[in-house]
Length: 435
Ligand SMILES: NC(=O)c1ccc[n+]([C@@H]2O[C@H](COP(=O)([O-])OP(=O)(O)OC[C@H]3O[C@@H](n4cnc5c(N)ncnc54)[C@H](O)[C@@H]3O)[C@@H](O)[C@H]2O)c1
Image (cartoon, rainbow, N blue to C red; front, side, top):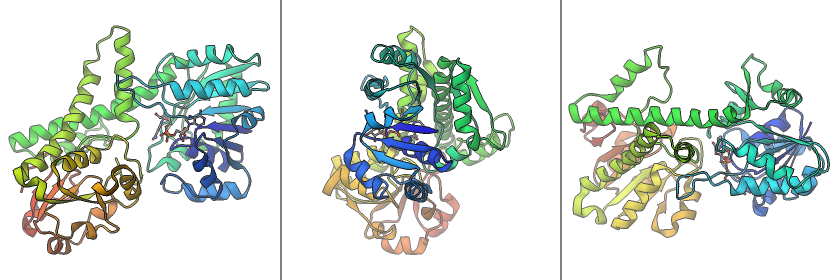
């Protein structure tokens, strides 16, 4: 099948490449000329494990091309995937301008029947809007389908290749068959393709992210209760995880969720519900608790050093919002770095892949260390922000010998208080007693 993917970001690049990997002819479009040029040279603009090899193979075998020529690509395909960004506006609602512009461009370029698949996360009613917009521009036949994406950055290729489920929002049997044909190679182990009405398909993506965010905020709130009363959140998590009614995922406390999806999707869902006159107390609270958790971590560090914070050198391990990605968007590291810059602290950041993005954002206000231990040289404290594997079992004596003050603020609970005590570190984690 010939597939055009509009938007070659974290989602579009993975989707297009994985479709090409199963034999389809895929053209990925982006308005960013530099991105397209570097992709055509096989250089990836993002870090995503396993993706580079797939891009290279499919480029070489000419199943995958990158171009800015949307018109040409749409003129010669059956399916057009919209994978552009839907960022959060200041008001909290989803910014649909990229989606609407892309749909308009697609409509103008159509030369015959097309299946237009919206993969971007968009509020209920967007597919209808797209339908009306496209219908007002083109006289060619088309169908609009909603096919939300559930991949996780850091595991995106695997998630797309082996999804738990695929959601297709369409009432048209012929379109459903085209979509099933596209996804057949990915669900051979019997994972379900859930066909539903368009509005439910739009909502199920928001519901998923809101559920994940709720679990995280719930655990963070419990963690704070543990700290106040002397419990240990690790045991609370173990108790919940052992109960088959709950499952084990997303029960880890931390310094708040970030990324391009959870924060914006929770607020976008609340926004559309409120527009309908509904109350969204749970969603509102989830967002509030999350921001408070990020603030709590920052305040803990500032509070520890008091008025001396401006004279301190603080090392930060991990800047990406989660491991195995270089994405900083809405990550807890940003609040911490912003606050430390404001206080005049010296900041040294080490992240296995996100260093260049931190440099792009902060310039010379922050030093980027090339290696994890380099960041610790003469540091007055270490903040662990992202739980990259290489931080989990470091050489503690080397850490102690490099640091000026042996203080660790562990936002991911990757070390144990007992061990930290034995090693002589001052140690602050989430939902456990300070050492
Ligand atoms: N990132 C994730 O993990 C994830 C997971 C599931 C769903 N989603 C959703 O998928 C959508 C895309 O997210 P993303 O993280 O890939 O965004 P992104 O910002 O990484 O990529 C979007 C890309 O679209 C391009 N673009 C914008 N307008 C365009 C146009 N008119 N024509 C061609 N290209 C255009 C941009 O240049 C950019 O490269 C969002 O709605 C997001 O909520 C994201």
